[in-house]
Amino acid sequence: MRIIYFGSSEFSGKILEGLKDSGDEIVRVVTQPDRRKGRHLVLSPPPVKVVAQASGLTIFQPENVNTAEVEERLKSLEPHLFIVAGYGQILKETLLKIPKLYPINVHDSLLPKYRGAAPINSALLNGETITGITIFKMTKDMDAGDILLSESLPIYIDDNFATLSERLSKLGLELLLVALEMIRTGKASFIPQDEKFISFAPKLKKEDGLVDWRLTAPQLHNRIKALIPWPCCYTYLEGKLIKLWSSKLGEYPSAAVGEPGAILDVNKEDGIKVMTGDGELIIRELQPEGKRRMTVEEFIAGHRVSQGMKFIS
Image 1 (cartoon, rainbow, N blue to C red):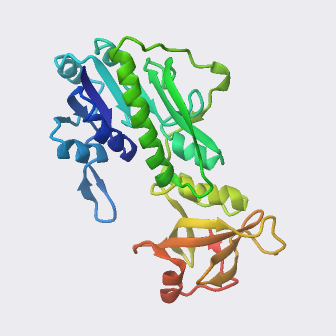
Image 2: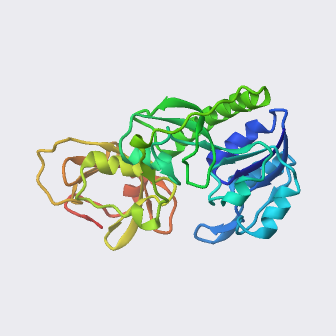
């Protein structure tokens, strides 16, 4: 089958890496344009472009995929299927009608739960213990099409966005290869989503990372796991921005007395113990403004931090 693959994210790149050996012809890889990133605003390609280049695949990076020019260009490739995974733009209805068969999406949640742009982040934020992959036929309504395949995956207590995304991409590739075989052999059948269980996972904004120390320790711990590497949870100490990369739960509920954000203890082996709205959170890795990510031991060696100081939101 002739496939046009749409994707941009790390999750999508790992799926493409396995898909190229499926025996199908990937006639085009559509991904987001290169963007400037980091402190030095270096022009960086999306992960999917890196994979496509290494595999010798033809790449197309439209700023806006929903234009008449793009539509004609994709139509001329005469694809049997669109495969979409973590692309970053919504495809309009006329684009979705281009494939000779249909467009399918590899979505990183158990639909209809967590429709939208940030399902992995949302599952971690909400303390879910199970998530999964859904492969569905795309329609004009976001993530609302009939389901071809879905499979669940446990969320481990130590999972963060990076580790969970890695495991979901492996499952996504496995299910996609099964789905392609079903489509090739005429065995694909689709079932409607159960509208009673719809929930949404909206796109993240930078301000979502600002820490509210009035939240409970488990809520903050989940946020730190969910929001790496972007937007990353951040707070302020002595007027300087600090990004929080990893944490663990301390005493919960806590017998300690203190305002949310107050530093209760500083220990290079254990971490920086902070009072929250309910319970204690122990910071294990952090990143001072303009510097690299570091362990608490490294941070303490070069920065003044002590009991009684306070993280400010």
